[in-house]
Image (cartoon, rainbow, N blue to C red; front, side, top):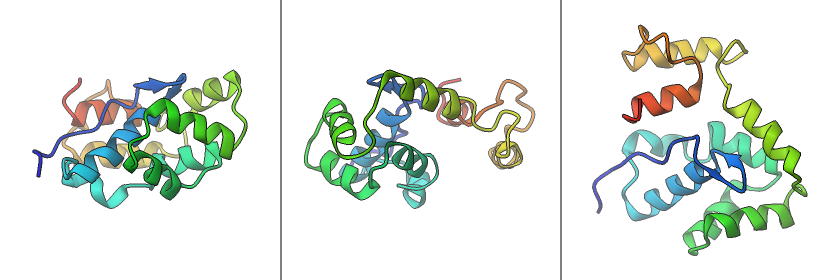
Length: 140
């Protein structure tokens, strides 16, 4: 078993889409026994599930592709062929939504709770879930 580690930043992209490389890396790390235990319970849930709904694909199908060794680019191409037909504007819409999640929206109270639970309530620079992930994982 590998040393547990954190996934990629949610700001990493494939095909212009934020978060997808993070989700795919969590699947890979989990399969290797390297994903930090804090992430196990929510695999396929939360933002993973939102992205799958946006792409109109099943998380389990993506998980199977990743575990079969498919690259990030191959998985995105599969999503394009099996889910919604993707156009450049889809990345703009998704990225605009997901990168601001928790900032003055219905998820703001949940972000505040998670910040407090992580001992980061005093960090005024954490205004989105992306900010929180990067702070908790030592990138900011």
